[in-house]
Image 1 (cartoon, rainbow over the protein chains, first blue to last red):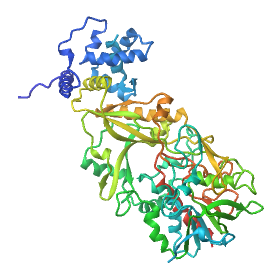
Image 2 (image 1 turned 90 degrees about the horizontal axis):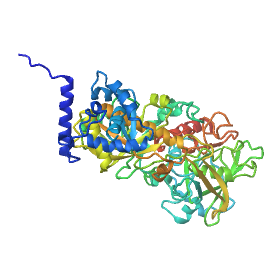
Image 3 (image 1 turned 135 degrees about the vertical axis):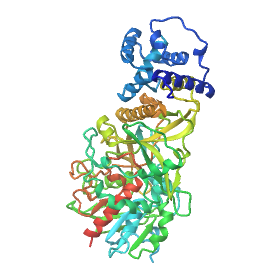
Length: 122
Length: 499
């Protein structure tokens, strides 16, 4: 009997968990999302895309300092449009393909990821 | 068999009369002498130094440097037989076709001919530098079998390959003096003078040809050479110096009626730690750091911009190499973890590396050599280098690095941090290749170049220049193998015109 195939979203989520565990094995950090709870924000629908929100916020804090005019509301509006009917991997793929690359303290990131990080630090 | 002659024993007042006189015994001069062997031409080569380093001779090179930091002029060259090859790193890579083009986004760019003019000479030049079989960008496939190169998504940067000179029976690059002294001794139509410094170029009264040049020695001898054709092969700094300092007929200097001699000086800036490259998959193959022997060709990869990317993004040439492993700081770890997680990548073995590069500069007439009032031990005016690098040269390279970073993300193989942003940070990281170029640039128009497409000085019937000083546009490729190809082409021309 043919097994039902897992959805793409489930596969991406599964990959994220595997990567998080891998990162933990690297000793880079413990994925705090396993234990950390955050106060609600208006952007939780977006921030839920981040597997390790604490690390993302660390990066986002630097991004905020480099973008004094950053507007969380505007960024969230833009991100929600990008996420319409697409998951994180697809949004980042589109960023990379369409050369929407952001620079955070020199680190080159897909723009949507940089914006998510900045929201996480907001 | 000829013997090497010591110019210090030539009586003052002697007049030598070869068919072809070569001034300078570096890679270009030696290559030209080898190429003119077994011709009916009487050839003489005049080298300032001897077989080994000598401090008094080397001191003739001393000069001033102003502007952007640069090595002292007597430290970036070697004044004895073999010239610059006595301290080179052996890096070889042919020029790219686009390097010859007049590029509308690169001021003063373009050669009078395309790469096809040099292609017949590349393999002989490759043999002279002993870089093994011609492999270069054909190395990608066989090297993939040795170890998978870093995957790049489609885009403007690709993995190119250097090859390395290695002298026969040595681990060092080919030192032309040591390597070819034996061959030179066996050339019947060649006389090679050591300790012979070309000190002055004397034009005919109508300034249409070189009548003769003076040779001076550090023990006080002075004699003359009257040749049918004379080739300056002193390197880009000294070629310009000799021409500027010879002013008895043309006050601005030989070949300098249009104020171009000494201008457009160039070298390859080699900024260190320009970026941090992270490989999500862990260790990258060892051939990224140490040249790998691929069937006799020592190869090492570099990231290079494709020609279409150069055109579309208006960037110049660059060759980026992985240098050494580095540790990430906390922010770097956060960047890697966050990005890898978002891309669904396992980065548990991620490794970070520092990268460096060699850059092509835009030709700049104000980056130049001028004479000073200081005199050397032979009474010749010393030089001042006014060195400049524009912010746009750095900014253009940054675009290439940004594209490389994008392609690593696209392939999910890694990511990058650009480490240098401000001008001060670039200048602090700056080193130089000691690839002196451009000071007697080639152009069909005498108002835009010192030599014509045959390397002959405009307006002079019998004075030629060989070596990197004729490069009008520089590429990011290391020049030695390329300037040898150009020299071999000049040899063919001389065989035709000197009878």
